[in-house]
Length: 429
Image (cartoon, rainbow, N blue to C red; front, side):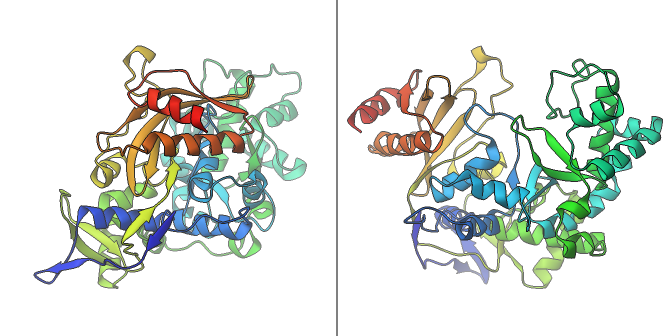
């Protein structure tokens, strides 16, 4: 996407005032959608630019199109080599490590350090199964930690096999939040819970994920850069302030609740951090016309006159994962319908909004049919303000996504008011 600079906020009675359109463009710029896509193949420099913009990549196990953390880079850079992201997350010097940020996320190592206060609270705040294993079987946590220390990075299944040779293998992967105890049983369930409690507490971290999306647990000192692993724990208040500042920079303009949600912070701690950042001039109170609550503007926020280009967004993209903010910015109510019974879904199972020239103009329910080599459009819906060329732009982006995913074709196989025009546009390309 590309931008034109200028068009800063107006002033009314000494207070900053943004129109809804200005706030929307400021938010898009903060998330990297005003940056031009690379003219050639994206490089690690381009990947780093996106990471600097967004601050985190949310993880999710659903792979109906692609793992969610892969999609934000595609949305901002276009087709890129997946090995760039693997290198960033799994090879020294690591640019990304995993922890609970906005849900499970990949974050820069420096941000991982700002979350140590959350690790310190694992005994009280981790999910119940994990806390129970700490209270009931502390020896097992020592055994899991010792196995990783001696044997290197291991999945929960490998740890179970190491500690309990001959134990039945679970058919479930390691992405169970909380663990699906009906599937995981006995030693596998307990070892998984122990590894997760150690991950939550920061005594273990993730060296990466397997092709089946299983965490590979390892020691932090073998994963984090030495300057991060060996650094002292920051004061909690300073750490929360640092997280709120990252959120402010990544969002551009946001309410306190939006800032708080970015790293899932507690209201009191978030509000204190916001007050301090306002006092120091990092954040400035602003009014956004049409927003019900006061907003805050980061001092580095940009004000492009326009944002041009197109992008398909993961439902877990940091631009839209806070649904109330998405509705305030774009006038679109996004709902994750994965867990909604099929008969009650409105837009589909895994729906990606289409961002076109700074507006959300359509949404498509997609499925990567890898067996047939087809990206299937299971539904396609236009927003009321979608321009006449929305189907043509969507067709082009779907073709690009299909090629990036290694699929040969795009097929419209479902309903929606945009489906007929999209089918015609695909036939014309």
